[in-house]
Length: 205
Image (cartoon, rainbow, N blue to C red; front, side, top):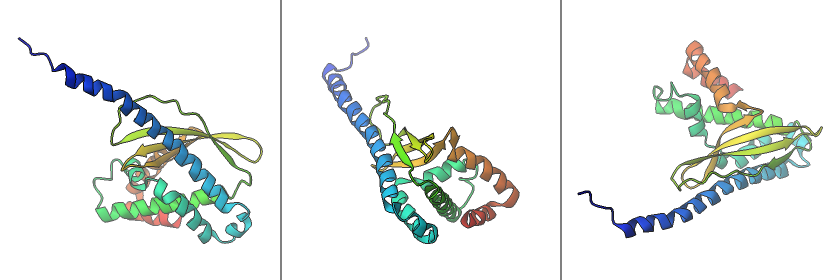
């Protein structure tokens, strides 16, 4: 005869599930706060200083780095960009690539920040799909960026909950993923130039 499972332990687990789902939903909502705060802090830091910072790129890079560094998961992004090569390269090469990738991102992002005088970011409502709480979760935060001429550009942030924090690992602008774009570019360049040359080019970009 098959033994039935004890009833009370099962009921206890079921009673905990709604609380776990609520925590997961609250955690997902916190990802929106990260994006909004990042945008607000950056725009506040450069407000009224665009000409000054355009003439002093190093200071601009430092401002962007301070805002982004703790909110961008450069290691995870690098792993996604180099799925075939990550296991083959040395720890030193991995670290060099992560630093070069992040530095290039900061410089490119900094240039874009100064191009628009009245850029505004609106985070769109999150459609939650409740899932049990876990150590690693993923969420897409969708925003609309309004440019000077009133044009709205959809910018989506892919985020990962890891080590008790939400961090960005990919940015999707008008349907174009940062990770997938660079995966194709670097995959070809590594084969053609070698890994160390790719890092050198990244540091110069």
